[in-house]
Structures are given as C-alpha cells and as structure tokens.
Image (cartoon, rainbow, N blue to C red; front, top):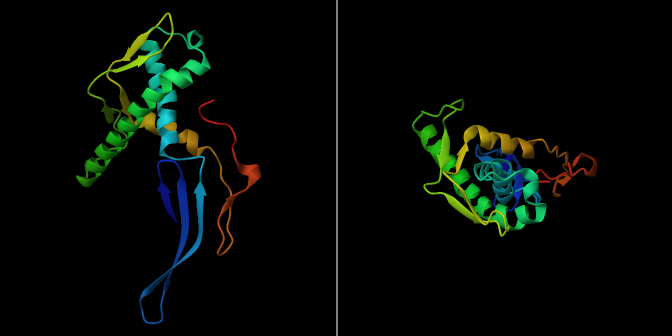
Length: 179
C-alpha cells in the first residue's frame, strides 16, 4: 500500500507485486482512492486550532468565550495555520535529518521546532486589537496529539479490482476535529 498525504488530499494506492516468468518483477494497481477530507492543510489547521490558538489566547489573557467562533475562524486561525505549516515542515525536516544520522529518539520530549520571531495577529476585536504569540513552537508530542485526531476517524475501504476504493458510509466519522 502506498499513501500520499498531500496538501489537500490523502491518496492511497494498493499495489500488487508479482514475479514474472522471466524472473523480473511485475506491478499491478489493484485500487486507488482520494480522500478529499484529509490533507496536509487540514493538519495545519488542526495544529493552529489545538496547539497555537490556546497558546496565543493564554499569552494574551484571552478567555475562551472572549472571542466568538467567527472571529477565531476568520482572524485568528488563518495566520496561525500558516505558522503551523512552517512548524510542521520544519519539525518533519528535523526528524528526517536526525533519522539520517541515526540520532532520532521518538521519546525525546525536547524534540521541537520553533519560529524565529513572534506572530502578530490582528483580532479586530475592540478589547484586544493586535496580539502576539511569542516563540511559536511545535513539539513532536503535540504533533502526535494532533495526528491522533485524524487517526481516530475509521475509514472502512471496499476494494474491488479495477475500481476506486470508496469509504463505507457507516464508518465515516463525520465530526470535524476543529469543531
């Protein structure tokens, strides 16, 4: 099985390898799927919502009910999602580098990525105005916490030779991790 977790989709292909009569290896594609509900941008938004937004609000003395959903969605989350993408990519690159050096420790509580400067967000709220998230950081443990939101959605796949996989409607977790 090959999984491609792209920016806006998660594509899955089921491949079958067979030895040919001549001794070579043959490859056939048994099925492909594209899950439009899950991609890298969804992970970025989840990091922004679950990790960075609470940090921003705590650092600026903003309580959960001080800012309504629409303001969070329209003013706070977009710049935090951009920061989340950079943090996620930086952390992924750091992990890949450590793995290449055989120095990766998945239990290292200090394995993290930080942005070099604060993020300023205009809340457009009369009481808060422009707020700052000082030293935006994403740890491996936090990334795993967010990833678990997507792993908990159980997708049952119906595979038919030569056809696209389709998720079973009774197995789709329709609740958004960001609601």
